Image (tube, rainbow, N blue to C red; front, side, top):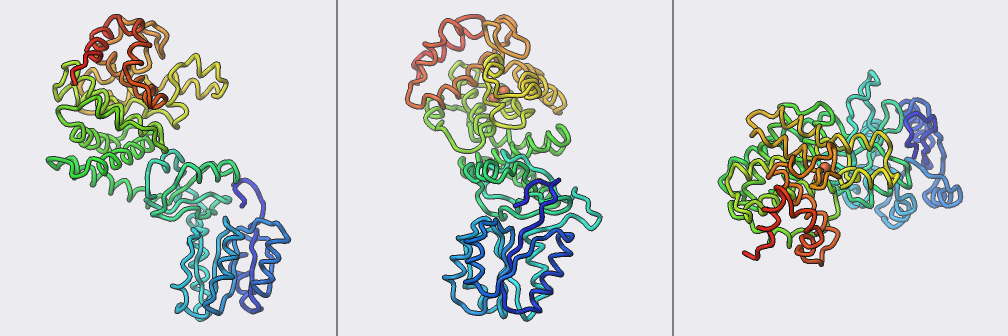
Length: 453
Ligand SMILES: [Fe+2]
Ligand SMILES: [Fe+2]
């Protein structure tokens, strides 16, 4: 596959059919669709086509083949042989098509009875073009991290083949996994994923509505489903923020998401129960840990005796927003700026992003209407440490507020539990006793160590 938009590599097309006129027509349509940039290979029969695939070792972007019978086995061989190609199968009419349901993302049909229309339709489904003006803005680039957090996919996902040209990689409703993301990144060099802008806008409208409805309900019917909706919302908000800042639209989703989170948490959250639920999940670190952070921070606050709805609200909203300015999970998983620098895994620009993300998130909270005043402080201080080794400001324990101190411990506790799933959390308290037994941290850590539940 030609994944580099700037590259002039042609699209590799294998055409299999004994019908000469069909070949000429298809060639004409393909030539027009791909602006003349095609490398066309021609075979007469499926058997011959399979031999070409096996001998040529060429990666075909698109395999078009005529198939007049209902026999599926040879088609199956073909699709397995070219597992990452797209296919258009030409059948005599539509009657046989329903029996060919392969698990191939890009498998479309054309018919001999209505070849021109059906062939072009199939071609455009797999390889859509941006608007006639060649304006690529019909499609928007979506952070792959966001795709991981949203399952099933709310829209078809494409890769860009060249200016104005796209190819479908996943269908709406597919479940996009980390291993698939790694496959496309490492094996195909595809790092940019696109969805249709109109579908994207529609999904935001739908999510805004869904969250407002969930928030308006007395109780959430299924906490697990509600958590998934909050995760999806967080991804949408992160994406919106990265495109246009903390807009009114993003704020509305954030607000209803926090309202739903508070319903999930309830008025008496138990830390032990929540920590038992905390397992290392595959998926998006930012989303998972932001959601867990709200729950753990509230459960800790409850144990410490700060169980007012106002406190729960502050902690939940701070958790939702705290890493919103970061583009991906590896950046969010950094707990020490010094270690991040020493690891040499991050560019100068990324280090700057890591360093400034608490401040940027705090700025976002200030733009939020009706937000309690100290939320920005919690967010700004979430990577500070009582011994002054934190970032961005390297504050000392006296400068870190009580709620921030609680939030910092909650944030660390999540990572500790993820990395040491079988170790009791008391070990965390013991390991950090000296560090945490001071200033505003002292009261919290002492209350947490009491075996009251
Ligand atoms: Fe952070
Ligand atoms: Fe974080």
